[in-house]
Image 1 (cartoon, one colour):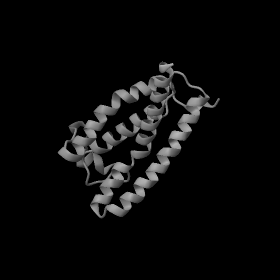
Image 2: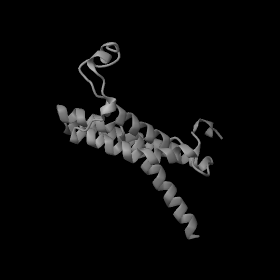
Image 3: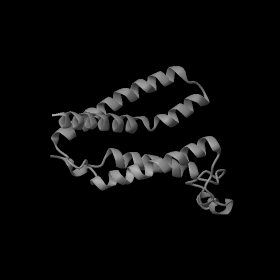
Image 4: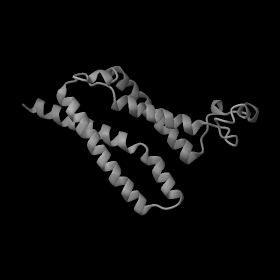
Length: 152
């Protein structure tokens, strides 16, 4: 059984704890122009890092929120379940395949429907779809299985 590449189960709990605050922060940054002051760089400190950072950008709240959401989704998706076995691994693989299929369909649909800045915004949100679809399908099937076992 090749579960060695999965993170321990406790990381899944951490992911569930941090997904909501980072999602709210991402929403606030995108739609309410919210910024965390401690993530601001002065022009003088940004000049020394000009090869790595955008010299016109002085606040990195958006990047912080994106990294937080990606990290939370990663921890949720790639941590072991309490009971990890071959069936769970097969379910993971099937869920990943479904996530890629749906992501491809969403990409094609979005390419046909969105233009200009709307397409850029669509692609920004589409970064999360593979992980979200994977987590939703995987957890749903697990829930259905546990429910059917309890029915017996």
